[in-house]
Image (cartoon, rainbow, N blue to C red):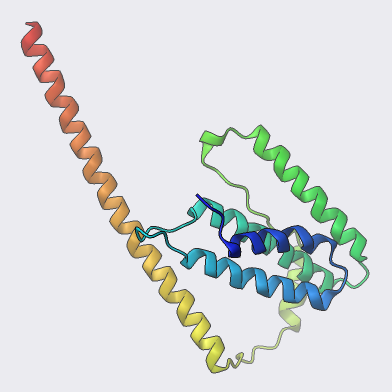
Amino acid sequence: MRTSKTEVNLRRLLAAAPQQKNQAKLVHYVATLREQLEQLAEERTPEGLPRISKATLNEYSEKVEAIASKLINHETDPQVSEKDVERSFVKENSSEIEEKKQIPLSSGLRRRPVPTSNTEDKAHELAETDNTPVKLDASAHAHIEKHRMLQEDLTDEMVVLAKQLKESSLMMSQSLQNTEKKTLTLGV
């Protein structure tokens, strides 16, 4: 299967992001990466199937969010240098590769990056936060609604797939039982 132009551009930006020193450009990179990820999720084959697997989409999404979390960490802690962010990104990626080598692929488990923070910091941040509601413009509401609809569609699709899996499992079980009965009757 051919790689689409969107996926090529996404891969290029993912590769270029760790070397980007300009924070404003990095913010733009993250926004563009998220848009490209959405476009990839919407791409379909001529048969109407998703062009890219959900596992690959999740992998790309995790990489984008790792870059975004580095950006957020950099903005909240101005004492951290850009080189430190870049080094930690490279170390994290290499440790992820090593973890993937150590964990058997059949385990079906993925590791998600979890930001480490101190509970005292969280309590301090909660005390400082203002409880006023955030006002969103129409485009933000539309974006949220779009993602809500995507999530509902995904949930519906998962229900259908679960039903199909159950039906095929029952059919396979019945087929095996019939085969066993035939074998026993022919053998006796």
